[in-house]
Length: 187
Image (cartoon, rainbow, N blue to C red):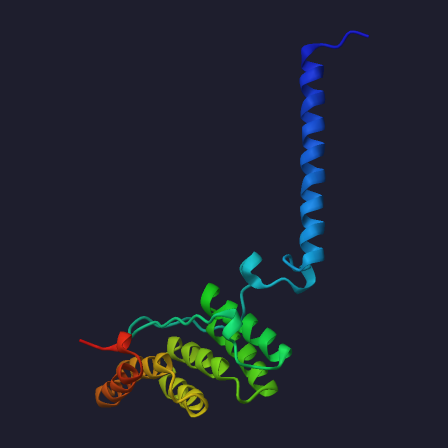
């Protein structure tokens, strides 16, 4: 049987395409088995933006918007469920700016572990970015009661006091942060 050059090229493309599909299936199966890929029903919002949330309020302009990051290995809670809630809230807070929705996850994490310092800090950041400064300060105070030597939390509280129009309190927090860590020295 005589085959045209187009047929041979198409056959190679199909074979190549089949190899690519097989390779992709193999990679996905390997990732699922090793835990590097999360099944769709538990996928974090990092895959695609979450749908619009009717109760979500938009951040007003003005003041300072703050951010926070934590090392996954440095998360202090011993509760795996609390950590999971915290990480979901942190994703909404840091990747999507979904501050109200992130608060629900931080509250769930804190319901499981009231001594979860990072959840108190992240909750404070969400409140700050919503311009709810008094609630942010209360969250930072809870975190500082658990970890008084955390310069980053002192700094965040200082930023919040400054945005709330309380420069004396902001200066005190910034002084405490600088005493604990010279990287927080304000010129």
